[in-house]
Image 1 (cartoon, rainbow, N blue to C red):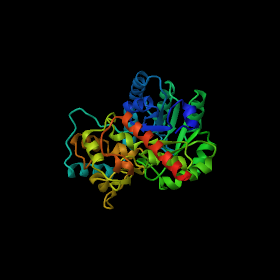
Image 2: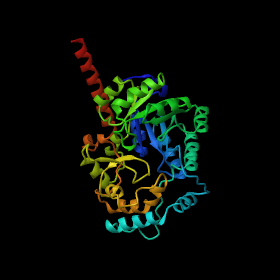
Image 3: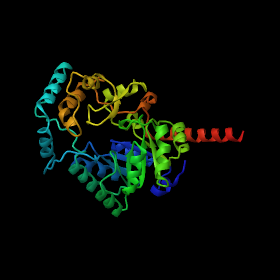
Image 4: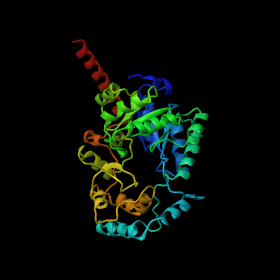
Length: 369
């Protein structure tokens, strides 16, 4: 399974694990892969805490940080997270606030405890994302990735000045080519099947298109990959490794809530939908009553990023408290159909590698025959 990316980062296997859980980051890197912490859900202060923990628990193994820096974002500035949130809330119209109130009543969501204020994700505002980058580069990370296009040129230069490689996700070959022109070192070709923010071209079609468009820049394949057989297929398409996200959501270290975990374990590959109801951009998640409500043509429809998440922040918090699997925000790719049990990260890594070896040996024997 060894590729040039293994030498670039000093890892055993070119298996990159995107996750919002620090425990998964550490476990994947210690098992020979490369853990990448998604920063978007953290305030700058909390991100510092998470990275300090990783530094203390990863045994010196390499890891990275994933930020979200949209090409188009609202222009907000503030001294604190509360300032940023207040500015974003002021941009949301009364009709959308009214619709969210109606949905919370319709689903009979439990109120928040007295004094608890809903927040919302502000990591995809430009100012906060830049602060995330500054914090990340103060730690011994080896990679900065951007989930929504090329990072700004100043971020790429800043990372390179620190000796840190830069990756960017792409859903089209033209986007991948633009990333490389901007100075990105690694392209993650993420197909339609992927969880979270994703485009409209399938992995099988996208990966070779991107590989050809950006050669010799290394490409990681993402979307619908959850087994050693699929890793072997990605390598056959020209990728130098894989970027896996959904697979870690049902690991023992994942931190998924009981309700969300129940939803994942009971889902099939046909139970996901691309919806703008959580972030404002198309993202793949489990379809449920909440996603259906935002697809209702009688409703006002989702707002853009980052307004939609701030709009629904109280509802999301109350849904989480409800412990109802039929309403939980559960971002995941179509590979969820094979996520049927809870296992430690090390066991998942072992199975991926073993199945990859078995697959490539079987192919080799078949060709020799």
